[in-house]
Amino acid sequence: MRADTAKATRSHLGGNGNGKPMTRILLILVANLMVTSCVTTPPTPIKDDGPVTVTMLLDHNPMVSGKQVPDLSGVDPLAMTPEMIEFVDQYVNRSHGHTARLRRLLYAIMGEGTFDLVYDDTTRTAIETFEEQRGNCLSFTNMFVAMARNVGLDARFQEVLIPPDWSIEGQSFIFSQHINVHVDLGSGYLGGDQIIDFNMYDFRDTYDREIISDNRARAHYFNNIGVEKMLAGDTVLAFANFRQSIREDDTFTPAWANLGILNRREGYEKLAEFAYLKALDIDPVNLVAMSNLASLYEQQGKVELAEQYRSRVRSHRMHNPYFRYLQARTLFEEGDYDGSIKHLEYAIRKKNDDDQFYSLMSLNYLMKGNREEAQNWMKQAEKIAEKESDKQRYHNKFEMMVRDGANPD
Image 1 (cartoon, rainbow, N blue to C red):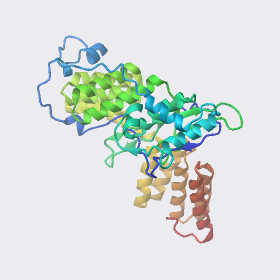
Image 2: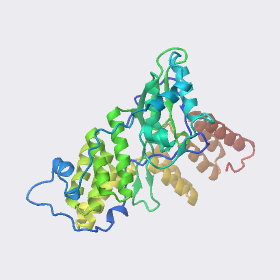
Image 3: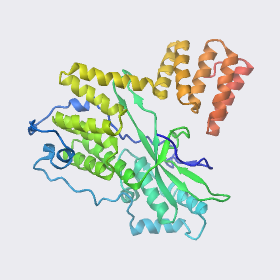
Image 4: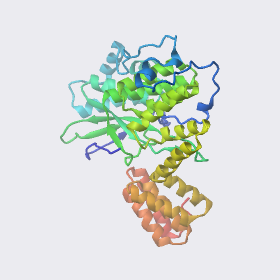
């Protein structure tokens, strides 16, 4: 994903008001344990005399046959109540300039003793977040976008592609996307693009990001709810939310992949396969769909087909700079500095603007006894780092190397 936002002045404003980081939102689940859950009731047979279709999967799915599936099209994650508008009016003067309105709104939500946000793992609408004063990052983002637009700010959702997490065994992973807010304050002395991020502690300016439509943001919302309902064992509501996510944006692959997981959990392997393949049709390098397909085919005894998908997963994973960085970090901890350096060289060729790659490279050379090369890499890490705290940290490490070669840790 390419970052299409303008290279203007940006500020990263976030946190939860209590100094605690907001954890990122899980938008795609890879659940090797989840998909092997026992089926408590025999599944309704699917006729093999014809192919599975999108209509069958979404509108005539035997998994929810005979059950009342709610229509979620009327749910508005950005709706506001009179109480919310009254709250905003207490802090924001709508006649002031864009920058002043943004600052006052941030103070209203995040200032000490004002709103007192509390983080939890539940996805909520703007109204629910305001009334309960709690939620996850997407919940707070929903509320902020709704309030910002109410005071006349050009606030839009923005996807941030966070590096995947791989398990220790390297067999499964969680692929995450984070949502924050892009505010266009226009041109002028205090204008420009502003990023409001309720997960400031994990946010890096080097992460790829893209402004998205409200429909895409709604797809994120319903998909998140679907995951929460699936984890709670509520098949009907999980299905309803995944279906609504797809109806909001039928190119949103997380919902297709999760719908595949849900169908497989309930014993509908043919429908699960169709959902995974649909995700791959939209995104041919979707590692989540590949991984789950490989697991499905392996269970079905289709060994060669399973290995084809596992091979594709391994190949694409090795081309991911963040996976190579994780490999490099593991080798560094094991004392294989040359092996670590090789992974980092690849990672930097693929993505040359992430300071943590350069920092680890510096530490490898330091441990190899090449202090001059270590200093060069740490200088580059300092130069690339966005946050002043990171710049200072790298500078301090550099100074330590120059002064006496002390262990930077």
